[in-house]
Image (tube, rainbow, N blue to C red):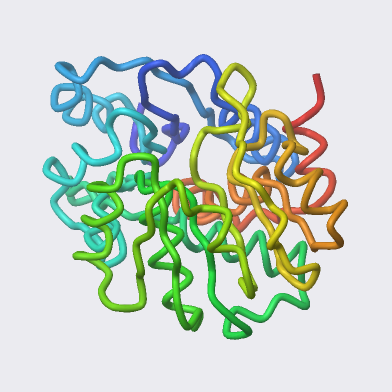
Length: 279
């Protein structure tokens, strides 16, 4: 089979991977746009990561999405790393180039902002401080994106303070770290509130930060999308806030990779959401 007739393959690597909604999303887009191609979930152990990245392009893969626990490790195995992936310290999108080089990018921050722009068009990043709960890889992408769009101050809190302190070292003076026990107090006059932790996810402990100080003018978003409407979003909505669920970030972060691999920029709309969340 020649290069001209080879059907492009892409996929998502992680461990575990069975829970991923990415195959459903990319499969929907492939069908919607009538494209030849396949998108495959692959459970790859950390010890096999280097071998997998060398072998998959030979099998016809044009790129990958990357999830836990490989998002940091793939940076060391890539030939080209974008500035934003380097700043965030993780990649979620790989492109296997025709010259044999592996190109690593991170589209999480762009997906996060695109989700807010689409679902809360009146959101004004510069209107006031942002509060970010959590200091993992997702928080790094969110903080980089918030700084880029002009948020004046980021109040960061994490259950383990040293991880939050490390982010302040990387992102500078706009990031102000607070102890987790003070988390509720940070909400006063905040214009944007983001939960990047797994608290509130199905099977995880609830998000228990008191929201009494929350302004009804704030935008509140949760990166958790199982359930779609977390208790944080329910309480924030009851307080009069604009709320945005986390599913749109998943959809928007996927679009740039799909375009690079399959040649069409997919639309993120209600039909896309429905395709991903239907039972």
